[in-house]
Length: 329
Image (cartoon, rainbow, N blue to C red; front, top):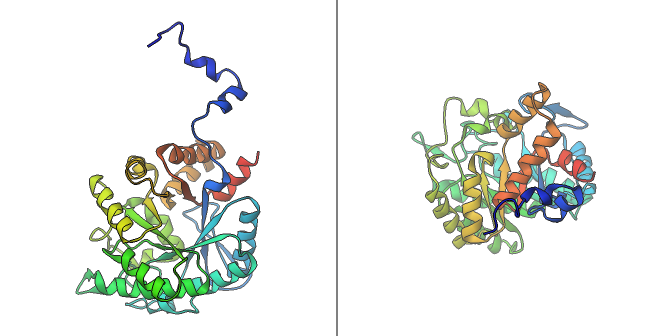
């Protein structure tokens, strides 16, 4: 190996053109998925206090915002409903209502913007009075009964026009069951993006504010089904199961504290691998920037590039629109 002074790595950093030429990873708008919160009403937007710059949008405003994202080159959006409290029940029946908030939103978006991808979350927490992702029996979130409801939820979302079903519940066996349900209902082309390695994280708090499940969950937690943050090998087992069951794409969630998991998953499986820069990650960066401690534009793009470097093919981020604008120059 040639050593200093003949080998000087700074030589390739001297000019901008050279830095661009030898750059190992690239971040473009094609790498971004924009998560958006939708709520009832018309011409109605509502700020999420714990997520500065993020709003809940009524369907009409959502359609307009999705059009702007599409024009920026963002290929897909992920829709999350803030279900009215009077629509929530112990068993989350509203999740399988073909005319629920998210299904109406999907239909409206696809009618106006058929060429942008629409991803729908599949889990019961926006619809249950418990705030849990599944059905609760005797204080425990039951698996197989929950999966049966998730299959019905997936089919009504596909009927509404959803392109990608994204189960975030972490029930065992749900990917295979949902794949069968979609195929049996005539939706063989609808994709499944599995939240395959989703951890029981403290970074989800602002999201629960945004969809209104925080109050429902109360002092409860999701540790009996979401993964233990201490485990890495288990993440590979979870992904392997979902791949075998028919997942088209997989996701690691949260993002920055789990870059090692992103790397391991991509290296082992070579499957389209996504990562979610979750609400708490977004909120802490944005709050620091709003206090003048960080440069928001720089840390947003740097954090997204870090996901790409770890092996992610795409990133769900609340900063997608800002990032796309910055990448346009």
